[in-house]
Length: 145
Image 1 (tube, rainbow, N blue to C red):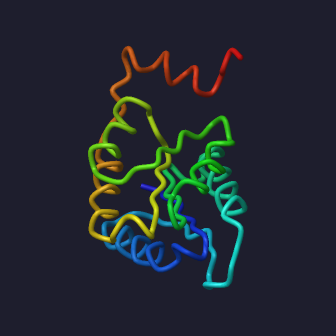
Image 2: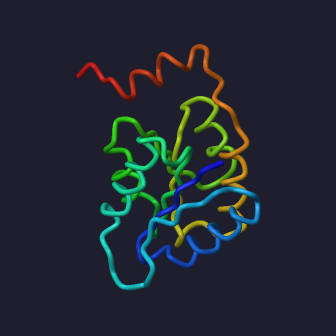
Image 3: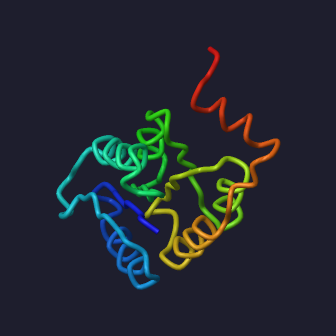
């Protein structure tokens, strides 16, 4: 699977570990940065991640920051992307099964590497259930506000 991964400076170590682990699992991984621990603005990397998922360059995305909250908000600004903030495998699985999430976000200060890998495994192995969930997912990208 083609996976894009991005973070801010607070999550750069977790990003590198997950990137390498995903490659070991046989995935094609695009690391969208940053490359150093110099302070950066997470929206810049969240928007970049959302863009490559929305245009199909990547099939799935992984967004990381200190809490996972800020970067997930920025990723979700793109109407073609559904990014779920997860902290354990069940939420990652349900994000795929019920919401057809194409990105997940995690907080490096809140989620250890083993739990992050478990979340990623659940996220990547779970299929969207479709059915009654499809009409709800359709509304996420086309709100009638």
